[in-house]
Each structure stands twice: as structure tokens, then as C-alpha cells.
Image (cartoon, rainbow, N blue to C red; front, side):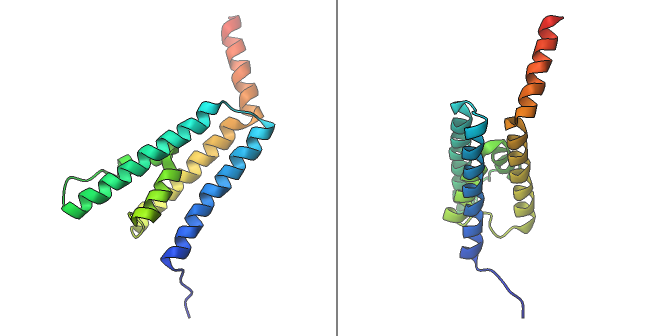
Length: 137
């Protein structure tokens, strides 16, 4: 007997990714503070991404010119993926396209990986060293 997850269970799992990122962000902020604009950038790109999903959903219903998947994935990759997850679940949009979902989750993983790497003290030290090297020349 195959075990299948319901659509609502899969949606709850998607929301878990947002909660996990929030924990990583907040715990990281305790040890390696980051500028407030970083949180603002995630919020702004998430709102734009949600709006793009809503526009695409509406256009799909009316057979109009669609927002490209590349555009949706790009906005998710640059930080709008929390808004994309909410849009996917609330609007029930792009939840059945397996290829899209696979690429989407790869962009989420890449964004979070880059965020963690950029937030680490090692990258901060490398950046400081590079700037000092350039300035001292």
C-alpha cells in the first residue's frame, strides 16, 4: 500500500520551510547581527512574488498572457520564496507541476544556502580582508 500525502499536509510542510528559515534568521541574528534591510528585502520580495503568483493565477483563469515560470522562480530565488510558498498554498497555484516544484525548491535551497554563507563570520572576515587589501594598494 502506497503512502500518499494529502495536499493540505504538503502545504503544511511548505509552511514549515518558512518557520525553519525564520528560526535560522533569528538565531543567526543573535550571533552575527545583520542590517535590518535584509529582513525588509525578504519581506518586499515576498510581497512582490505573492502578487506575481496572484496575477499569474488570474491570467490562467481567463486565458490571458501568463507570467513566465522563469520570472516566478527568479523572484523566489532573490528572496521572495516565502511569499511564493504562501501564494502557492493560498491560491492553489503551481502546486501540481512537479518539474516547477523541483526547480522552485532548488532555488529555495540555493537562496537559503547563500544567505547562511553570506551571514557567516568567515565571509565577513574575507570581505573585510578583501576591502582592506584593495584600499591599501
